[in-house]
Image (cartoon, rainbow, N blue to C red; front, side, top):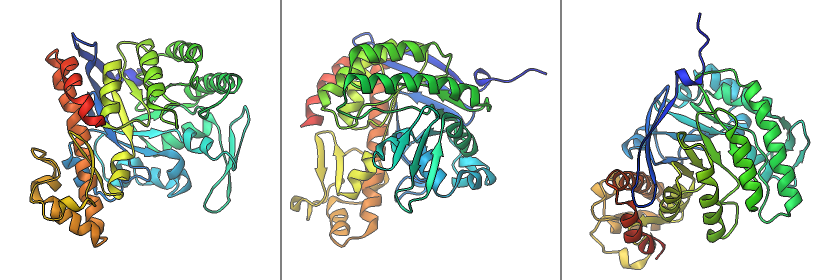
Length: 376
């Protein structure tokens, strides 16, 4: 009997590279559906995108969502999720899912964790319970959850940090990556290695070289969007992305404003995620083609227009700025829901517009047309 492996369940086709910039359009096939890239992926940290139902997420055109293994390990418990048929059965979502390894969350608990070569010991910030996650435990957790794409357990160095700290974290990430691949047993899950190296060119190049020696379905760029200035983030994205295998998807972790998507796509990135659309919504902020705006602004109190003219999200099809502002001022949760729907669909549609421009060899023009307005 044939032994199945990841390549029996996953594939990636690089369909076209933009003639102006080299930006990429591709197609990633997973056991639970195909994903057209470039793609923005909404984040459902606790197996739910905040304030939205699965049907509402689907209505935004989302092709894949994220869940976080660290949070699900602590609550509801990944063994319980496995008993419900994994993440897809647990939350009744029939499209692809990606899980973060939990590494970033664990390492952000600087006063509650201890890093060793074996793994990380930490305390639950809510109740103080002691836990331990190693590369092997991370793989067990993510295999219990059952996501299509799972991430290697890595050490994310802080910003700023010195060279020796960054180098040690990168090298441990590489050693842990070997352990992750040895521990993963489910061929219906694709394990993505992660580039680390903090904010040092030579370390980033070395990390990209090392992780590329692993024959993975795709590769990720981690350790950015951790407090560094935008120009530094852009530099290391532009430096790193082209170093990863050309015919595999490239995932920039934790990045997701329209201008971030424009830059990342220009630099050769295919996949993006961020909690920002729903976080912004909870503060009254919404995306437009001229930068962010805020529904709390008094100018919207009698405004009959949708949040963005021409947007076909549920919020824009059905409600005015004045109505959503009224809900916000009355502290109705529906305001956050409507703004979240809009923000997620805006980014998903924005990625689709980028893809269309790539396929038509005009992404450079698209970038120049919109970038200054978006950062406006």
